[in-house]
Length: 191
Image (spheres, rainbow, N blue to C red):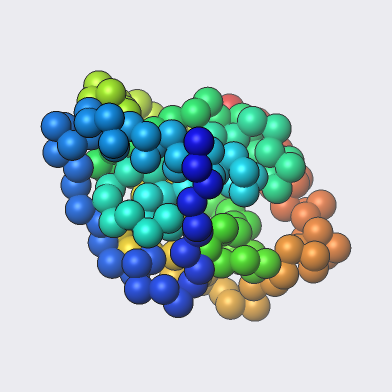
């Protein structure tokens, strides 16, 4: 088990699109250890997800998991999911406003419009095919992580910069209202 350093906003690794991972590389013992370290680092930092380029590896892989996360107590749980070479396709045009934060952008949150339903196509960590639909808040989490792999940060998607705030001010002024919106989204989409 190794905890990896997390790149911070401003580092070029976060702005470069990542390369796809060939199946042979994915299945190597070295790459499997890297995935374990990525997951351990995400857990240690209480992240809902972590992309490989956030830990200085410019490969198209991310980990997602929400399990009673103290940073995001209002998010529905998501089982541990490893996405390799993911492709997201919106289903419909419906979007919702999602207050987002990021391990690479410490102490800052902002509202990002996200598609409410997506088709997710990827490989899992063992090279098996993933083809599923995600909805609601969970769909927002998937979009956030795959954005990283495309060299995008949530800051790039904030439509109204007046929504930017620190975590403390989010908790103080915005969290209760956002929790109500999350509940409505979860009631509608089930996640």
